[in-house]
Length: 186
Image 1 (cartoon, rainbow, N blue to C red):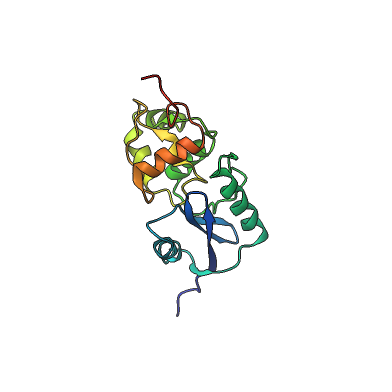
Image 2: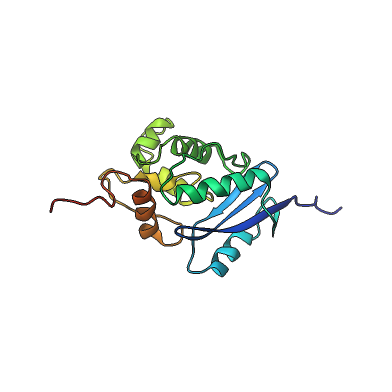
């Protein structure tokens, strides 16, 4: 008896103000998102990497993905959108990750929470480290805005997307987050 066929999923690369991004989706929502890597070939390789639930191939975006791409492009130029309306495949995550990502998606652009606050909101006091690990596994950065979660001292610690902390800081600057990219008196 052969294994059931894996569903098809699609992916597309697109230009943004910060570089080439990519998005992968299935019939049920976004599966993966890629912030710019060192070059477009690396971004393409990441987005087309085999997915546990679907075989990915490049394709023209659906109307829903075209709308998402357009708003992501605008967001990355400073025309901010919370991007919460973009559907994410609900089967991607375990219960803990799903809870962390729901709280994270509720953080508006220009605002932040710390890891401990996210842990408290999901009913896991003392779970800041587990929240950080969950966010490190986030396959859909920006749409699930893990860059808006900071250390308790408001410092930048860890960001698994290409460019690491430099990318995290740049996203916070684009979103006009207080304390990031603002001129200071001293």
